[in-house]
Length: 111
Image (tube, rainbow, N blue to C red; front, side, top):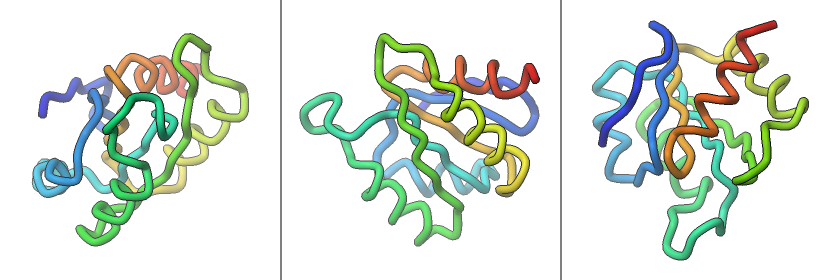
């Protein structure tokens, strides 16, 4: 699993699996954000399965799905701002490639 640090408190990654959760926790992350809608690609882990594994590892989890090919909605931006401001960091966000998560973080932190 490779991730890209956008700030000291926020990193993004491509799709993760349940097996990646221990490494995410070991790296010091406290919250995981899923920015990928379920069913986008066959065989992709569901947000529920990732969320259950994250919670079992003592991490906070939230799903803020953003459709591919669309910019983040204003609701997704606001929800990301609220997550950054209320859930423990550092935060690890993922989508198919990490790009949507990075765009969402950029827009959420520009205000």
